[in-house]
Image (cartoon, rainbow, N blue to C red; front, top):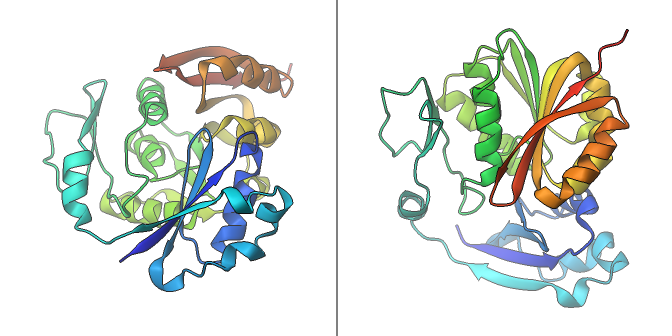
Length: 281
């Protein structure tokens, strides 16, 4: 299937990503990417209309109409692209994340199959790798886990494999929601529930032992209170999706919401931080 890719500059506006995603989803855009300076949306060729963007209030409000770029993305044999650009990844030599067309490794404890669903959003990232490492190195037996911004569902799947009692995976992106469901089935996981939405769904699904949130700085800052409220006393939260320079801001907001900083991992200036909720008394 052919697609159109719409590239929108968003310097300083990352806190509105969820709103923009929701608005564009209603117009037929079905997959999204985000960089430090751009928001990228994809729409099937047969649904694309250049006038659609004129109806999106967010773009008019921030006067972004004239700075938007649109590119045609032709269909191709994505399996060949994935095989050359989507290598298997080992985490701590004990966990393998691979696509269905990669060979299994009987020597690892955790063999996770992630099926690339589209032509975009499939690359392994430093933040994902660090979050997987944190899950590998900590106890999840019998834990209730929330995975915010679940993407492909890989963090949820590893938490389940590490004997979590229940996992709730949440993502606002419809592609991520569908891809997580697909990957859960491929890995034969039965204790993960998936919801399409944002932090608002936590109010009805709270009291988690562990929360993992690999999103971006501004969304984390906005939603930290929701995460803290949903965490049991003494529970842990892992945050990633931001840079080393952002640790101070994330930590300050976390501490103001009853979360104690414990430690962090760093990889190519990306960070994953661990916090614990203070126990009452």
